[in-house]
Image (cartoon, rainbow, N blue to C red; front, side, top):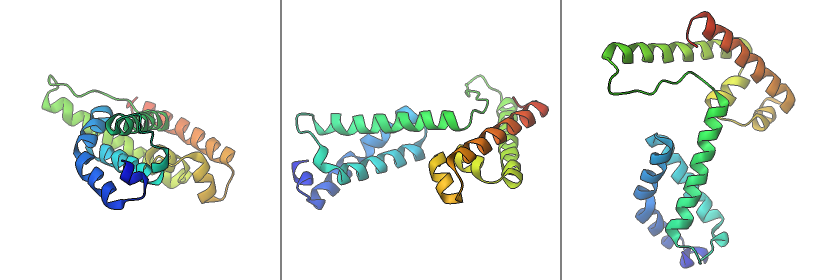
Amino acid sequence: MKRVQQGDYSAFEQLVSDWRTPSERFAESIVKNHVLAQDIVQDCFVKLWVFRDKYRPEFTFKTYFFTLIKHRAFDEIRKNRRFLQLPEEEPSESNSPEEIYLQNEKEQRIFELIERLRETDGDCFYLFAVCGVPAKEIAKRLGITEVNVRVKIHRTRAKLKKLLEKEDLL
């Protein structure tokens, strides 16, 4: 890590090579999603390189890097919980194939409703809830105020809730 701090990119590549797999396993143990875990680890490696001067050598690399991953993973979990609060059913070994099929159909219908709302109510809710774009960034992209974005998200979430209740999906 000392070489990385001095700007040695080959040392950084070696760190990535050595730590990618264990880091992804660690991230996946938190977020329970392999693709998301890969994204988190990649983001943390980028931050490690960009902010390499902030590394404190009194901590082992593993402690330092896994702490970065843990914080980033928890941020992702909080963000995804806040964006869209859909009914969740934990799959269990006791679920029959019919129950699993019905749950998948239910999830598919929920996303169809979200897509329909996207067509009628614009992209604010979709960008916020599905894509995870912060309200401030949506406002900048769409050229409207952040307050306006939040109002649109709130209204669309209320419409989605009514649709879910109407179709007995909530």
